[in-house]
Image 1 (cartoon, rainbow, N blue to C red):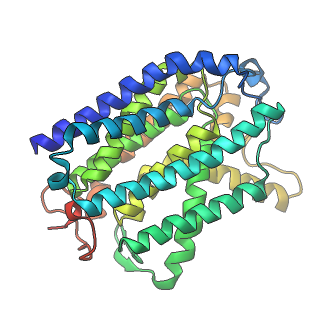
Image 2 (cartoon, rainbow, N blue to C red):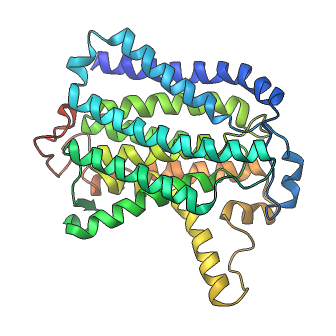
Length: 358
C-alpha cells in the first residue's frame, strides 16, 4: 500500500511540476510561431478580446503526463511488475492510445487553423473518419485484452447484459464523449478544472477497485491539470486547443472502458455530457421549429455568460457540480463500488491482475 501511495504521489507532483514548467517555455514559443487562437464569429462577441491568445497549449500537459509516466517508470521499475502486472500495463497503454490518438486529431485541427488563420480546421467529415478509425482500433484493443464486455452496471437496475446492442452504443458513445469534452473547452480554465475533478473521481474509483494503472494515469493527469491551470485560469495566457481538449476526452473516456465499467464515464463525465447535449437539443429544436431556440446560446456555459455570469463563477459552478457527483458515495455504492465490500460484478479471468474483484 505504501508503494502504491508513493507511486501516485510522485505521479501527481511530477504531472504538476513538469506541466507548469513546460508552460513557462512553451507559451513564448507559441507566441513566436504566431500560433494564436482565432475566435469563431458565431461565438460570444466579448470573446473577441481573446483573439490571438496562444493555442495548442495542450502540448504542455501532454508532455507533462508522458514525461511523468516515463520518470515514474524509471524510478519504480523494480517494483512495478509486482504492483501492476503486464495486463494492467497493457491496459494503461490502451488508454494512452485513445488519448494520444484523439490529441493527434485535435493537433491536426489546430494546426490547420493557425496556419491558414481561420476558425475552422478539419472538416466534420475528415474528423469523423479519423475518429471512427481510432475508435475501432481502441475497441479492437479492448477485445484483444479481454476487456470488452456487454455487461453494464446501472444504479437501481443492477447488472444488465446489453448483448449486441452494446457495441454500436459503445462505439458512437466513445466518439460523442471525446467530442463532448472538446465542446466544454469554451471558457478560461473550464475544461481543465472539470477534468481535474473528474480525474480525482477516477483516482478514487481505481484505488477502491484495485486498478493501479487507472489511479496512476488519473493522478498524473490531475497533477497536469493543476499545473496547466497556472497558465489557463482566467484570464488565460494560453488555450489548450483541440490538441488538449480531445486528449483529455480520450483519457476521460478510456479509463472507464479499461476498468470494464463504461457506466462510470456517465458519472465522472456528466458535466461534459450535459454541456454537449445542450448543443444537440438546440440544433434539433432549431431545425424542427425553423429557427426557434431553447437556450440563448450553446454550449450552455455560454448561456450563463449571456446572463451576466463571469467566467470564474461559471468555472466554479461546473467544478462544484462535477465534484458533488464524483464525491457522491451513494452513486458509487449503487454502481458496486465501495471500500468495504468491493464491486458487485466479477471480472473475467483475462482482466488486469490488480482489478480482481473480491
